[in-house]
Image (cartoon, rainbow, N blue to C red):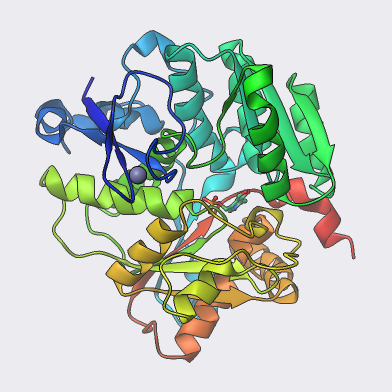
Length: 388
Ligand SMILES: Cc1ncc(COP(=O)(O)O)c(C=O)c1O
Ligand SMILES: [Zn+2]
């Protein structure tokens, strides 16, 4: 067990690791697990990975669970990284890759975060887990809670794609559909959790979903033979995957696996809900709540993210940028990626393509650069979006 403590991402305050925490007790910002990486690196070596299991637990030494018996797994992680040759040719890139997260349990990258969070909740004794969700996090929590024998309480906007609602019901969760947005769902949990005895597993409001998601960064490095790409294009709601990858790169550098070069991190949001893009353009470190948030890419309908400054810090430190695309563009891109690469993307993942086209046109990405798009989920969950 290599976790030494939890550290506030903003004020740096140390918190004890072996108990349930939500936000920093001083400034109410996200807590990030810190590890004894020298110790981790004694057994977690590039060579050792050759013989390890094909899921995210291959990076066991840099994951937070103490006792193996508490690991709740449905086979998450170690998803394929495809060379998107045909699509790359169409847009003028020879080194275009797609990390296909639709191949996770519950068909999205949310499985990574929930595998880690539910394992830790089990280890630290939580019984009832509550989450506000745009859809995919809900499906993932419901599945992992079921596997762990814990109760899941799920709050989603009532216009969440139907597949997400049905899968939560069929995996035994308590589902509440609300008028409003994911932020309203989160506020409802905040109001009721104490009386109900719920542990809040909202993204970045507990310390471990980001740990599951950081394995995206480890996998990417390993799959590219320890050479990070030039550009990562990532559809951003709460930003946990981007923050997690950025953390993974630092950990890998400290373990001596990679150098100091980083990919340029590109946040993609929907034009109807683009708080991070707005803050990036305005030169701000914290994002204002985006008014009247609306997009069919439900995972991107996050008007206010508690980890906003962590996203913005990473984008800026990497020399990256933040761009928005319209719903018409991202829906059309689903078909373009599907027809050229055979991957039926979630609209959030598809949004990466029009964003990349913008960057190519603006000269911010060159045709000889290696670019990775993140398809974060499956289009199968969003049939409503494609029927009109
Ligand atoms: C398919 C999909 N992509 C992207 C996101 C945004 O993820 P993150 O919170 O890591 O920014 C979500 C969140 O719900 C999602 O479901
Ligand atoms: Zn703090």
